[in-house]
Amino acid sequence: MASWVLTAMDLACQKAQRTLFEGVSFSVPAGSWLHIEGGNGCGKTSLLRILCGLSPAARGQVIWPAPGNTESARSSSSSTSAHLRPDRSVLHYIGHALGLKPDLSACENLCADAQVSGLALSRAQALQALAAQGLQSRAHLPVRVLSQGQRQGVALARLRTSPARLWILDEPLVGLDAQATATARALLQSHVDAGGAVVMTSHHDVGLQGPGARLQLGRA
Amino acid sequence: MNASAITIPVHAPAPALPSPWLAMGGVLRRDLRLALRRKAEWLGAVFFFVLVAALFPLAIGPEPATLRLIGPGVLWVAALLASMLSLGRLFEADHQDGSLEQLALSAAPLPWLVSAKLLAHWLISGLPLVLLSPLLGLQFGLGPEALGMLVLTLLIGTPVLSLLGAIGAALTLGVRGGGVLQSLLLLPLYVPVLVFGTGAVDAQMRGLGAEAHVSVLLALLLGSAAFSPWACAAALRLALE
Image (cartoon, rainbow over all chains, first blue to last red; front, top):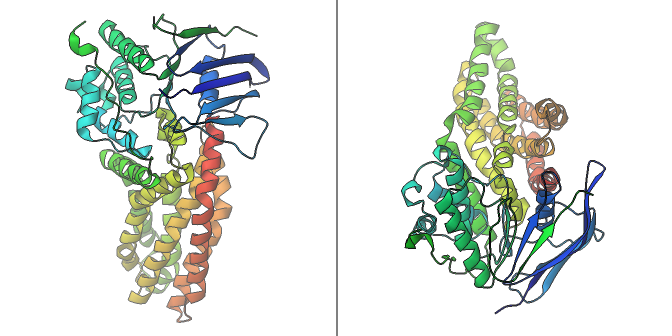
């Protein structure tokens, strides 16, 4: 099994002159999970966005696994020249905004999303992923008529079609009913068991088994 | 919990490498499909163009010489304003629903994806203006040569408007009251396009030959096509931070 690792070194984040957190260091090797906890406004989402390379860190650096898992790509907030960004062959990010187009059906959303990131995905594969998420009866409805929980389910179905081994999830279980929560847990667990890694925030206890850690972000 | 709830994830059979061309095609197809689902958004700008161009002859009066004189200018200004009208929401929807984050994380370079988005935008909101312009030009009594030159200059000029306008749209993304700021940013950039576009038609009508004007327009198109996607991508990354 490929051994790669996501490493964060001494990360700090500032928003509007206020330090949200500093000195955050951790590493997430393949086959493990990291659950980021903390109250509202303590910088959980900001940390995830830094881990995705969407926002720069005020200090510190993130080292991503390289595509192909042979060596690690590295980005530092101080080095401006060789700024390597991770992409969706390395990580899959689900944020607060799920990235679903309200006018497209769930199935079309999955296909369009894969194509936009340069991957081929057939309708059959998309339908299979939606069915695994328990959404087969909703696959051809426009996403705008789906409930919040069902939209979350569609976003999670996208994980099943992603080649990325590192999943970065912002509140992946919010709005899900009991059965969908169990499905999502099983999905995350099987990903970790298969040598992937999950970094997520959640106010619920997700209860993942296997090697993993919890990170408490406190108010600075 | 039933058995079907726990399923092994179906990972896509790993493709060799994510292809930037496939990604560009994906963006193009997605945006065109979205435009077909939501016609009101882009039809509004097209209607605006037709309305302005149709109202001018009614307001000015039926003097053929006057109409012929103002025709190219009115059509060009109407096209410019219609283009500004449709540009405001170019990145807005993607920003709000989170698709922009996914685009920024795509394995394909963001400037390529922005180019595909701009092409889609021009096909939806620029090309209809070009196709409608000869019909509207007839109202102003423009001759066949002038009409041909009008179509040609709009064909070259409207993509420039889209390319330049996208920079404004990307820079003002997420800014409250961005529309006003965007107009202020864009008007100086739009002026050369307008001047050379109307100048070409005017020169053609006077029998002076419009090669120089058309060359300048083409240069503007090449310059903005080479520059704009990168500027947009940089502005979008800033907006996402």
